[in-house]
Image: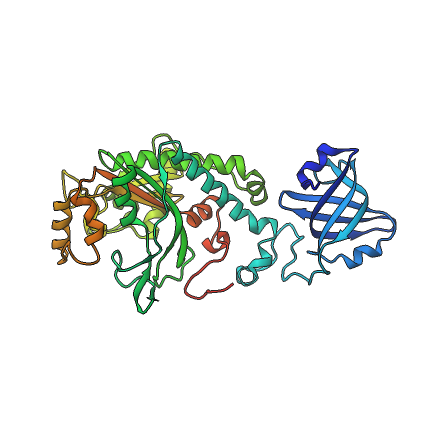
Length: 427
């Protein structure tokens, strides 16, 4: 029965079978070494005599090896396989487009992305998604533990509602349709069914951004829940979710963190919170600005680290003019919203807040925009509010941006399996 490379040290003296890819070959005068890579790490196989076989086993050839485990402090994990019988499972592999055996990736990002099916095999490149997978586990576990129900909502929708033209249009059996920008409308209506819901799924943004932080398709981690008092209740749940994600990354992706030299930060029990107007002052921005520029976010992030020792800071009370129509206004001053952005190391990571929940408030909000609640874009969405919806709110986390901030990646594409942007539709 096959074992994995990380299990070899516990099988000293036993005959074992391992299988994986030829990661590296080394030939000395009297002995040769084959380094095998599987999903758990690297294994060293010692080849004495007949080393010509190593010449045929090119890097990335898939092999199965049966041999005896011997202790060796110099080998990965302190053990190696000797007296091996090596069986190729494929024909000799072609030379990879990048040298996968080197500890550091020698190729630039365009080369890595162009050759992603093979480049992702490099332990340092795949580490980004190992961290992402652990974060997904933490996200789900944290919300499962708080009574949330996971849902899946349509990604093909009939109307473009949230950001006008910034959607991908497609032909749907001869009629117009669009790729969903978010599950916002659906997750709100599902609060009327399950009270607490979350979703993990792709979202699509046809925005002409060619930056290191934007993608045309990314994984959105959404949550929505009822019976909140205001947006601070939403922030409290978000804080627990981020803590769960960080904990899962630390416990489930330790090898990936080590490969990248990453230390997982802590999110404070009490996340620093500043009002939008105060954030503008901290950043030295024009007090009439309706939003925070990237430079402003960095300044607020530096302030939080300096004053509170926190990599996280929440900015609340964004102007209503910059928030979607379903956002609940601040009761004491309706110019501002009961919403927030959570900044992680100076970059917006999460947008969340309290939503409107009364049908009459939606009718008024849409009328102020010159739209009607019975318009096709809103009629099915607002049906739920006609029949009673509790005060509710929610948030959305961009998975790739979370991993990029955590790992210190300069470009979000470094931690995206197959990024889609203005210039990339393959592989």
